[in-house]
Image 1: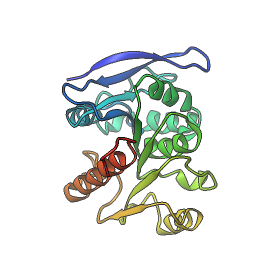
Image 2: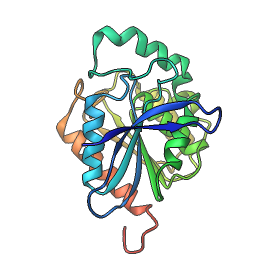
Image 3: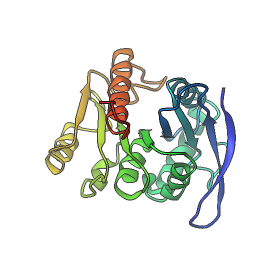
Image 4: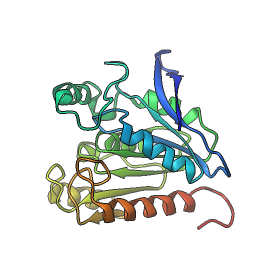
Length: 226
């Protein structure tokens, strides 16, 4: 089990929370998990614990703390739907919270990786293009990537998307592929949020994690890993 820690933005000194899952055995690197619009949910804390067991010291920064601290204690709570969409818009779908992402990156010893889901998937894309100190990024169903398709990741990045995702139409996928022909885009027989409880698809979740782990290992800079 992890614990909540306090981080600080270098941009303006704002202090925000992050869930921290430490590694108990051999460390493979650091990992920043970027949450969906539901915030740092029990599901994401459990996911962070799982990655820590695999050797990745993990931080899940609370990207909405500027709007409401401790947002989203329950996964996909319908009572929070209006607020979480408002928070996403207020954060410009990740563009205005990259200072928190950068602080989380700098709080971890390298190599540091990032992955994100939905809102966090778009934020991960922006982090790959704008943040420093990352070795590789995996983005899961980032619905607003299309709005930043002209930005290019500066480090190895992969995308995980669902073929039946109503929030990311095929035309958007093709636009992303056309703009970034060398970018690996993995498509799954699933809809949106196929890693999350509300849209979970077991085969897609498992395969995407295997690909993400292979991507991190390949770009870890550790000799002998592929």
